[in-house]
Image 1 (tube, rainbow, N blue to C red):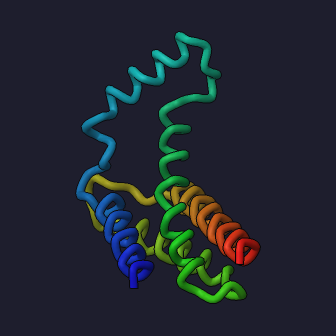
Image 2 (image 1 turned 180 degrees about the vertical axis):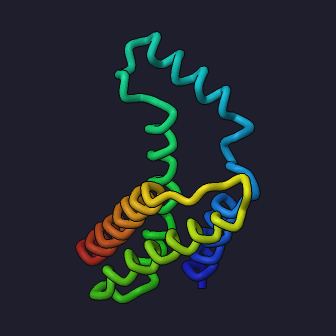
Length: 134
């Protein structure tokens, strides 16, 4: 039951972020740019850009949904957890086409999918550790 609650909470949180009428990072855009500049002044590599931060955020956004989906499904259906997360990401990106201040992106789907795979892999690892402990 707790896992189902976690799944619903994760789906609701991701949906709220992806379907917010305007990009959720808009209020902190300047702060993020200043933080990136500060990091670069202290030797961080040039590839640390706003786009890179956004890509990492897109990956992170789907780690928990991937993890929870993988734990809800039988171990042999791990691939279905990935597929469900990818379909969810595609649906959210298509829904963004209806929001004037948002834009859909295939890159976002790819990065969301990477996050889902990390979550599913983490779920497999946790199941393996649990079996080893038992």
